[in-house]
Image 1 (cartoon, rainbow, N blue to C red):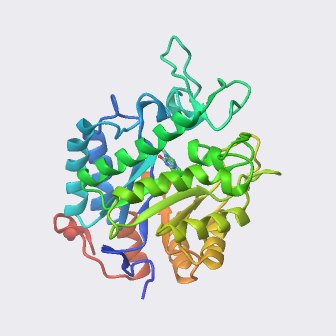
Image 2: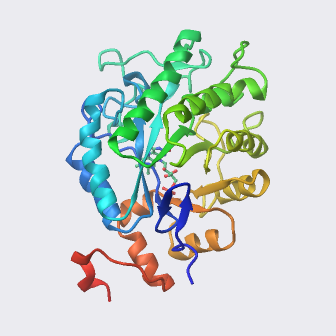
Length: 354
Ligand SMILES: Cc1cc2nc3c(=O)[nH]c(=O)nc-3n(C[C@H](O)[C@H](O)[C@H](O)COP(=O)(O)O)c2cc1C
């Protein structure tokens, strides 16, 4: 019996399997609006059998976008198009989730296929914000260190975004606190040199993430799951460590977070990351074992057997796949066949099942 296809119940939500479409920026929006691209892209993966689809990093404010083309959720007008996609995903048995994001000092850039560099003033650059006035690297503009008022705005932006996510029908919210974006840059000592209540000690550096989490909790239904994606290691001397992640996960669990999605890196350009099959699974395993919270494993998980083993061995509770889902939106249908799990195909596709 495949464990990958064993349903998972989190609060009032049941996931038909443990396979998650990891959030993936599409850089295909105008003024933050979802459109037909998102419907077809996300809809195909719902038809493909995923248990949960996490919609890409979605800007809680215009200045929190990585590029001008990011998906957004900073105004009510964004809701109807998202609702249409949510309905489609739910109609096909997938739980709809969304990742709420603020890019911090990594905002105001070109899309990867435009070279990925920081926008120039002529190209419409906007001022970026961070815990401290430290650029990501020499060729990047220096961000503005957030003051108290700016911090309060970030917190209320996440809260308002969660209200809109609920109104659009999402059942899972994931707070993006990884990859060097704003919340990660606060908890990592490599990017946070503040001397106030948001910098210095571990407790101070995680404060913003905790305040954002608490603000989201105030409006997110208690019977819907809340996930947090972290970078479980900076892979850099003097940076955030896996042990820090365990401590953070314990605090987040105490605050009612349901699952820690364990990614890594992204906060400093010089990190040496031993990328290879399943290279971040160790973090999901450690956080799960030592903090006692549910975890998600992500990073170069590409085969049904790898995904199955992670769940069967108790290393994580869900597996998040990104690029493999770009190669094959029907990965779960294929995985079920390979692992001998009985699942229902969409009726329209059943003639191809055997
Ligand atoms: C096209 C693309 C867009 C991505 N966008 C996001 C994003 O919006 N939020 C996020 O947390 N990670 C993002 N990632 C990272 C993935 O979610 C995932 O963590 C990473 O690609 C490793 O998984 P993989 O080896 O299965 O691709 C993106 C990755 C890709 C390939």
